[in-house]
Amino acid sequence: MDKFEEGMKVMQTILLVEDNPVDILLMQRAFRKEIFTNTSLQIVRDGDAAVFYLNGDGEYSDRDRYPLPAVILLDLKLPRRSGHEVLVWLKQQPELKRLPVVMLTSSKETIDVKRAYDLGVNSYLVKPIGFASLLEMMQSFNEYWLNYTELPEPRECSGL
Image (cartoon, rainbow, N blue to C red):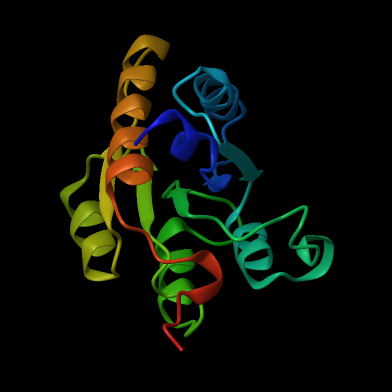
């Protein structure tokens, strides 16, 4: 891709569904690094808010301010609705079911990993300890999901 094509890249949104304030802060710091060009980070702090955001309900109805994400980073253990429950809901939505979901959680429990894949998660990442490790993981995430992977257009996830 030449410089002109890079300049023409469309802004991509990542939806982070996370309730831990420290993890949110670390992710915000990682996204401020130069590796995340043409990327915006939207944050919701519980499972119900994730559903409202994705559905465009209430305060999230303004799609200019709250665009559909290119990829969802979803924590597993959330208030109101777990990451698994959000995943079940998402995969039942014809217009959203193709949105890629990366589970980003501290759980290494085999049962959690298996259930997430059974429910249709695209990737399962365990949160690393320390900012340097998180930054390294997010650089790999950026390369794979935002630079190399062909993602469905957020507004055309249903394929209709």
